[in-house]
Image (cartoon, rainbow, N blue to C red; front, side, top):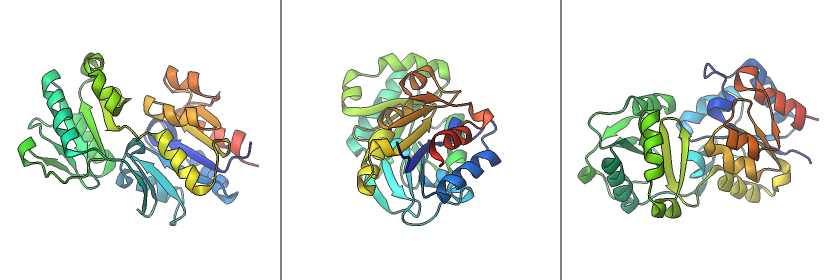
Length: 269
């Protein structure tokens, strides 16, 4: 197996326990790049939330890529979109109504803004806004523009409420959309064709690569599809059990520079 592309989740994987890029991780990624291996950051964040780490890792040019919005979009790091799977305005109406039925906050992310119809904006929405460098727009449902491009929708609540509503999500939603819990505070809903695994497969096809050329690293449920797709799926030591069980290998935790350890062990010549 020759690794030609490494796909890396950001939060809980690339970043350490302090949400920082460790020097060992930067060095390992740059060593991979120097050997001609593409490094693709794969995140639930929009490109604006991925860009600071792309810059620190020295990744640049139209032939370098990122997967954003949990696989709704695959694009060059300069912003040229290769794959785009979005939700419709009708999807927004149905998904938002469910949030009111079960009593949790709801937001959508577009290429430019986070929109919420909740006057009492959740602290987790504010956290997400700061994390991804994207402004929040409060809009009543009746005020939402019908032509808005919706990259993903999110149910937002305390962990206990997320656990409460998970079994209440209708089966027709699960059949129609890609539904995944990305953190204890977020359940994300996307176009059925969107997932990190599907986006990575599409990107690999465009680059003339196969799954055997790809190593992936992740820790949460939204990483599961790319862990399963890759020829070498690597779970972080801090990953949830489902990811560890699906992975081909388990590396150290993000607090122990697990990404650097995996790159050096499995990818570098």
